[in-house]
Amino acid sequence: MSQMSLRKLDLNLLTVFEAVYEERSQQKASERLYMSQPAISNAISRLRHLVDDRLFFGSRTIQATPKADDLYTQVHQALNLIRAEFFAKEAFDPKLTRRTFTIAIAYGSGYLLGGAIFKRLQAEAPNARMVISHVDPLSEIPRLLREQKIDVAITKSNLVDPMLEIEYCLDFKIAVAVRQGHPRITQDPSVEELLREKYLWVHDSTHESEVSEFQEFIRKAEEATQLEVPSVPMVPVLLSQTDLVALMPWSFIQRMKDCYPIEAYELPFKQLTNHSILTWHRSFSQDPALSWFRHLCSEVAEGFRNGSIKI
Image (cartoon, rainbow, N blue to C red; front, side, top):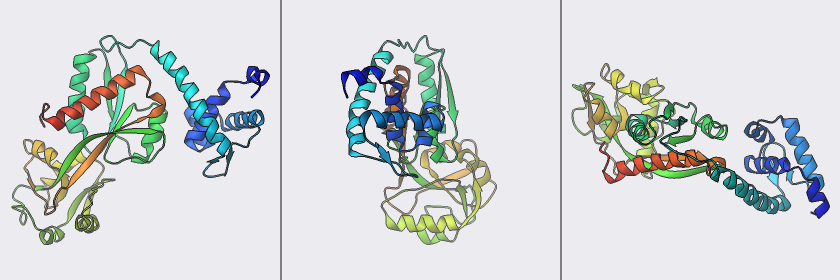
């Protein structure tokens, strides 16, 4: 690009190019930048003329040309330098902030992590506010992170999106939950005993394992579901009133036993855990307030892992 054409370059074109390249969709780029789709299309057309390359092709899923790949590396680095410079000048003091931090915690992890994160937030940022959000379906999380409607998310599985950053959070041991005095399950059950039962299932829940026998059992248990609920906190009260069986985090059952007449038993499989992952949008990785909040969440999770914070 010549010195003359550089003077004529609208730097907003670069942010549009970056967004389209990362989102692989003009519609998603328009949502991310709060611009209309015609404005996005016009910006890309102008940039194509400037660099003498089509940059993108395809309709439903946009593909980048080799020129666009090379250009993205340079543009992204340059924009990150600019963002870092501006963010660096935004002083952030947790003790003074009145910011609201919004965290989406999926599949009942809020009972464990939510309180501990809020306790740390109160201690370090006494004027801040925290919102724990429930997101259904989980596929909405990337969009909500991109639009800053949530700041971070703690989910059970990795969300496939190139713009998301992830960090391991916690593992939860999975167990069998039934009411006290269940007519059939009164000790650690066998697979055969479990397959004769009917189940209470949490909507959109997944139980991942490399043990093929467990995956086959999960498929059959889900087929034997008689009652489905939208969230984990509903399970203890409903279990206590029925003869249904649920698969739940062991720590959750143990906590709920103080409030509801339910019992926890071991599953007849080895090393069965659910993984939770801390997720955020990479566009805001340099935001000082969000970096601080992510670090706080990570430290709380580490506290559970090393035992300094008790379940």
